[in-house]
Length: 187
Image (cartoon, rainbow, N blue to C red):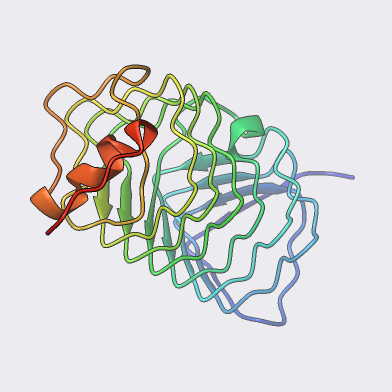
């Protein structure tokens, strides 16, 4: 089957995709749940209101992608094409997704659910976590230098095993840096 190249096209909920390259495309309310998007290439695309739950992403390229209000449960971003991997998330549900060992500096996570997301060994230098729920998210040997957690909540980050130099936290979130000590902090 021949790969396709599409540019500047808008896809809506009933459109199906063929393997290929999509550049500067817009995807509205598309349901990709359980689909196999392996080897697809997306560049400068916007996905709004799409369902990506449990999509297969082996060697999928996401370059300068915007996800808005998308359901993205259980995704494995760690198996995406690493070259040029960059995206931002706003209002997305990313629970149980894996960013294991990805290099995604300056990634923006805004108003998103990241419960039990795996950021182990990822490079999140300069990332912004704006009003995100990070309940049981995994930060293990993660580079979080200059990352901003000031408005996020429910995180537990061990400063002894993660690189957090110049990261930003609010005073109310400091307890998330002390969880392992099992101490009571009163407000």
